Amino acid sequence: MFDRQRVAYLKMHNLSRRQMLQWSGLSGMGMLLGSCGTTLLSEPIGQAFDPFNARINALMQSQKPVPEFPASAIEPDDKLLINTFDITPQIDPLKFQLAVNGDVDNPLVLKLADLQKLPLTSMTIRHVCVEGWAAIVQWGGVRLSELARLAQPKATVKYVYFKSADGYYESWDLASALHPQTLMVYQRNGRPLAVENGAPLRLASPIKLGYKQSKWVTQITFVERLMPAKGYWEDLGYEWFGGL
Ligand SMILES: Nc1nc2c(c(=O)[nH]1)N[C@H]1C(S)=C(S)[C@@H](COP(=O)(O)O)O[C@H]1N2
Ligand SMILES: [Mo]
Image 1 (cartoon, protein in one colour):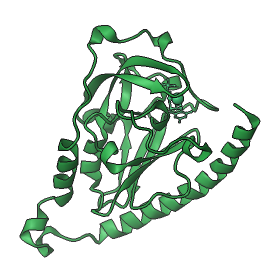
Image 2: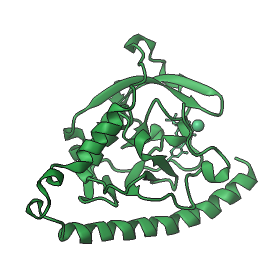
Image 3: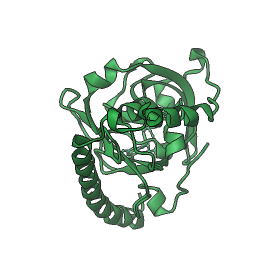
Image 4: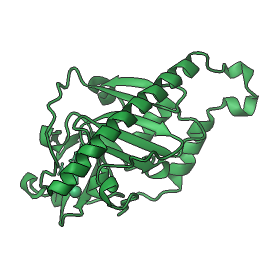
């Protein structure tokens, strides 16, 4: 990495730490609000029926699944370059916890075992890195929309932030985050995800470039607005949407 980039990274890393504090503040607020949440009885009958699920379904149905590859197209592991800008965090899978929070009615803290009890979705897609390599990979994990269903983001939510154990951070638009092939994965090419590739848990999606697909994700935060820190590479000049 260029020195210039490293300096910028360190600056952003500090900023992101402050940002993280803001997010945990947000999640604390979510919990406070959650604890005095509305009862179904106090709401008009029509709205009591899970309005966000309807929104998730509408967003998911408006997006076409990307065609997948047959298992025979999966490329050998060495075709997939490891792309990590700095350290590789070692996370004990038994101690690992994923926080799902922000502007949600039901903040969650999930262990890997909890995630593994949720419906498993598998997909074989092409991973594309802007540095000029690509590989066909099989990923297995939980739909992010499934986690949203459980956390119940408020109707005002438009973006999702991902915090990683190596200091990496990303933000996505809500529609892309709820795409049926946007997964939080713990398997790759039929095996448990390797540490270098983001274990215990990483993002994977056929609709975004590689740099949007955070590895070692520990926190998913639903928000109304984008913050000054949008993403590690984006804050160094890469395009924010990063669509494929
Ligand atoms: N936390 C974290 N996530 C990350 C990165 C990183 O450096 N740190 N690199 C990104 C980039 S640029 C790419 S192309 C992919 C690479 O995934 P791989 O190392 O499993 O091939 O991870 C993405 N996610
Ligand atoms: Mo990348």
